Image 1 (cartoon, rainbow over the protein chains, first blue to last red):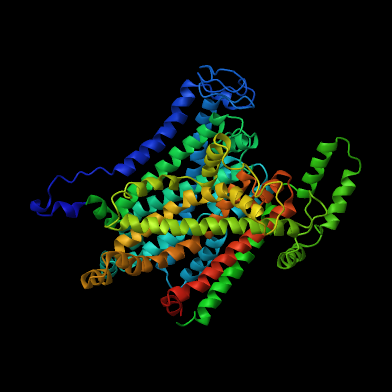
Image 2 (cartoon, helix red, strand yellow):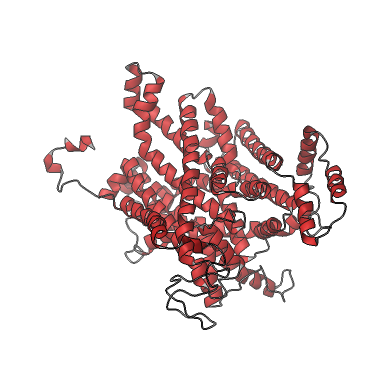
Length: 303
Length: 336
């Protein structure tokens, strides 16, 4: 941003303090899911997220279900058929899903950054190998492999699932970062640094990495979003962690119990709504980061 | 127009083979690394189901012998590769006398048909919408509609399927809730059957189209923004071509190339999405086969279905790669 300050004043009609609106709305949405998890634990009994802790099949407070039972404030969002309180399920499940996705996203982005840098830097030695491997890995439908792996491994915990998902989601960040490193190598300031005698490590960490940060962040958000997607997929197929409530396992049990046709919309609808907020938030953050990382988009958005 | 160079085709074919081989190997290795013994687990399940179960130890030993689990690993591996190449995945453990390949052969056409129609619809719709979003002459009336249609992009296909099922099947009752055709129809080329298939396939296909056309539109729009500044576009405008001609012939045509690349790359995740949507709608494709096999711990079927899905994805990408040089002749020159 420093170079824009030196522009002549006449070219600047209004002070350039444009807020990156998509980024902030996105962060707020994700933040509100985190707050639900943090504040909810303080004010609500999360023990009710487990079966038989509440009367089953209650509608949300004030509504009456097909059998004429009216929901009460004791379970404001209703309960499902094994007697879990939906509010407690959301308070426990939403952060679980988010946490799992963040772990998976961090691991796959880290692998992507390392491999992408190695491939982009040593064009003649490691690059063809890494490119071939990531081309191959990219073609494999990740969900299909994950299905086999998980059904063999059996019951998994949150972190095992995160690592499994990350193990099949690194090719995308690797390809993206490799492409960026390759184009950055040719840019003026990197060439200048090379001519000034900077060591490869200096070029990587001082020149390139800081400039790539918004890009890596965007890649990370995409990986998180992909991890949620993979997790939901596995959980809907009945392969997720069964003992810990997450958004996906809740939707999965709702579908298995035909909640859609029993009019129990709160059972599948509420976790889906949280997921919509989650995906929407991640998408907005990504659009916002894109505006920072990609000057062309920034210019266009400013028109 | 020259075809792709031999080197290019060879590289693509190697990638295709490697993809299938690597995933087959993962599928073989992982269950062996995983804690627990599938044979013991299955017998334990039988014991749990039937209560008293004499001779369990003999049964375990017998099964190990029959499945060749006592042989050295390299031999087991070679046998697995042979069965994968010959498409002989053994029998389904649950619906016992049926070979796995028969179950797959019945399910795969449904998956491929539905996925192909949904993907082509989403791709063409997204390309047109994206082009209209970037065009400066798009009618005023259409303008707000376009970004509004993007909201579904953030959703995974499964969730869209759940929503559509709730609104159009449960609340409105316009579409059937499960299956691929009505119970009373006899499969074949008669009008009733075809209409029934369309009626049943609409919601599953729609859930894929709804969530995926937005991303095609977004990338198309981004591409057109760049292309509208290119010299040849400026020249075309200066020469005085009609705006519509300029849009479709100059801009969209050039933007199609990266779009096609993206389509090839997206196939893997498209298949994943379709599998899940099928599971929701009980559509008789690979998704439903997988769900059933997972529920029943029918490992032969899971392995076979997974391998065939991976093979399908890799083959589709390979075909796309072969077609691509005809669309963009520069590709085979670059791959020298």
